[in-house]
Length: 308
Length: 279
Image (cartoon, rainbow over all chains, first blue to last red; front, top):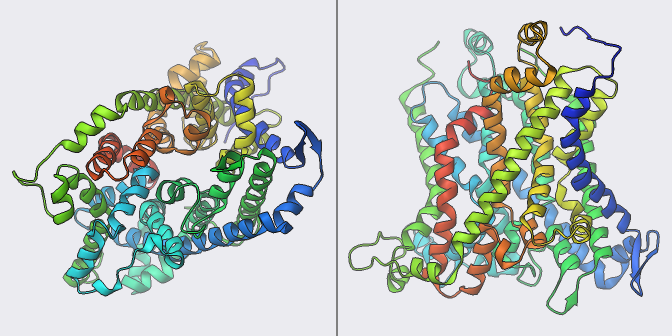
């Protein structure tokens, strides 16, 4: 319990402690964020910003020159997210469940090793995998050959129908460490007496995981889901490193981040367009905001938090 | 405690899964590093074998050394990462202290305001950030990157550190106050040393995304003299795309520093993530 220490004097030190963080955060993050939202309502006409209302959004959604790319990027991004939810998070939970079992030898060595891809930069991951999957080099075909599956090999990153899924799986490979660690921490924080009580009642092994531990770590699963959502709808680096700004082949791997980059900065013959860039950024903002609100107001409220 | 539930079969299965996944996690990294020490022919003829006396070659590293300015890139990354990290830790700890220690009007609101940045990525404001940097003449300077990364790191730092600061004993601080210490002294002399483990956790969390970021260097500081390692490696690889020795060596060089740091700090990182979970 803290006792309110109300003093009549002005407590300048509170302001002094808060000021640097609040100033930098406001100036470099919050104001530009709103600046970008604001820019999406303007368009440059004859070097002057003119207020056009929702015209930019209409262009993005309905103008055939923009809408095809936009819906393509949004669809791809959604698929990117679905793969993460279906592959990354279950694998992370499985690994965490195994790692947290008591008396497991070498647990910290496994943990350290499995987390290594997460600390590598996207450039390494993107390009490294590109080389490994390259049909020129032949690392992937020779591995598949070793297990007798050579006929399954295809230049996955170069085929329109496989490229996005392949990149999503590469991203899963890179980030599986994060759900693993968070779930691992949640599993470790379950008190011994609950586990012992379950064991006394004969609930052990798999059924103990499903009936006792899983309900207790649901809040953490909620957190990793929303973290995955935000990270995926904000992704850019991996696609850019592996496939370039054009997100080839034929835009098959284009997601909102790469679409924003191309629009804002321009590429090849197209010149950059700050207002359309802001419009895309605003849409990304709304999508992420919707996801976060859905989590905060719908998911988190339904999950009972267990206080130990 | 029941021994029966930990049968050897179960334990072997657990190890099998973990070994398999560890192999998946490490294999690509190993392939890249191992092949960077081989001759061009050996890279293609037998990508999965270790270099021997005949196939060992440092030609890739020589090309990187001669063509790329990796020392400069490395230095830029180091300056940006260390400076942003220092600012995030100092300012973040100060704000966290204010929020967790004092009751004042708007406390909760301020906490929520700062927490907004945990969920909303700073990248979405890029268009206006670039305009801001152009207007203030900071484009192609490391200062621009440091400012952006400080703003990016602060929300999570404040959030984690204020959780930890609430655990610092109230009696200790009050004892300090009775001894006549100013609030600044209490923060810097009493509280800060006690939350050092939490600071280390925040440091690792903040450092990795800054070191690995490609977006902001690409947009705010793409000039040759301000390139970071991540951007430098990206551009170098783009230029030398057909020179496999050089590309593999550049990738290995980019992996190495992060890996060394990770091995040094991994215990800290894991302890941080599992903080409070120690039984």
